[in-house]
Length: 377
View (cartoon, rainbow, N blue to C red):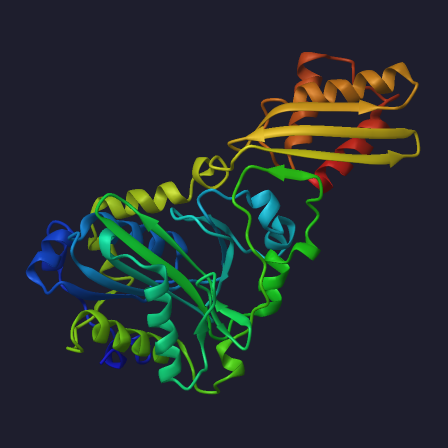
């Protein structure tokens, strides 16, 4: 049923301009209470914007399945601290963008071997367990011995293949999750494994991810792919909510996505802004210290919404000039964005506000501190 829309990923039907006049709610009313949407777009910002639009603009009593996947990226929950949850240096080195979604939950790695499902329903009918079991049954259809654990993760042989999160508004709710089919697990570990991170000393008020051993469905099936997974989930979805009667999926592709309401593009743009990706970071403190040849330096930095609110830098050095310059760097860090470039921005501030403080006599100390903090922030 879904194969005609997914097969080959190039021969996809247009869904027609009429569908987009004016909102998804209009279209939903004209259809059954059950619908399926498939995105062949692989941009995380676009897919998350569509996901939010379907939540807000479809009928409250409608059951919807939305199927999609993205090119490589790391997606953190709305209330997470990416400085604590992600290996940002590794991501930068490999060109993997950071994305912040609108729902809660933990950090996940996306690539084209990782399928994503979103199940919408009326708020009063929402059940994480029921949705996870629906997807688990879909895997069992494909002879994969999946089951749901106590955290509502979908697992196989004790290894997680799908983590999930949810969002609830006044009359609607959705449950969305990833499905590791043939993802690059080395990249996943590089981005998210705690043992590869250099973030000791961060104490955050944000939601922390719960690490779990993971595996790909490919370990249990040579034939499983995105299309098979989508078809199987759709089959279970219509059995559960449409008495087994088939439904015709609506496809979003690069051609017709531009016909979506303006609010979708507005949301997409907002999800890419610094204010959303970094500015939503909850308050945290970062305490670090280092022993240099000329003395020890300790830094205690407090940040909220991606900005440094307080930075206390001190040194055990007995040299008055060293104490002064270290303290000045701490003061200048306040008001900077929390980033690798923060100390360079602070040094530029000092040069403007206190001319002559940074000179040839203390330049080596400034360079030491700059390189150290650049490696820790």
